[in-house]
Image (cartoon, rainbow, N blue to C red; front, side, top):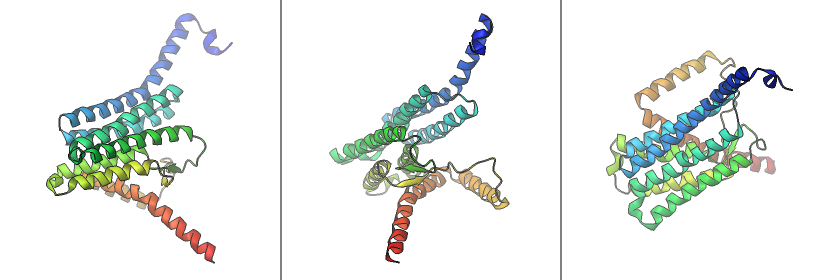
Length: 256
């Protein structure tokens, strides 16, 4: 008999309630991320595209917190993992596709909604593949662009265009089409992207790293949409640049 079973009835119930409270904590972040994705869809339908784009970035922050909270409180569960995937599908699959379609792709007719669907379907495939490859691939890398990063490319283009007045530029709809297709197809490629899981906050770092962190915070405060969008554009290209460099090194070693 386990220790919880040996406790008196009221004590056992209190312990069960406390344990449910711990499990509620990470799932509340997931639920908040789901709400942010749903809010982005609603705002896109009302043509409030800047609010919709910001909501997707808020969902990204909340999505990054739920897993960490679960690990810190030792409250990981199969339910939480499944709930997180469903939330990601709404926030980083359906919401960005609908926002981009309502913002620029609707005017392109069939081609517009086809590309929006390609992005949405790619997000679903990316999440399904990620769930089946947990514990199989190297944790240092993601296979395919992560869905939050893909959503950041789409939402970042919307946010920057509206914030800096670029939404009146000619042929912006074709640029939006290219970004949406690139983000969607990048999720289902076999290109590796760095997962950042090698970064440990408890490990000692050089003093210069703190200065870089301060500079990054200052840039982020000065222009959040531009800095975030620039970071995710560089991250989206980094996988392909790394793949080209590895292929170049492989060809040189084969010729040697």
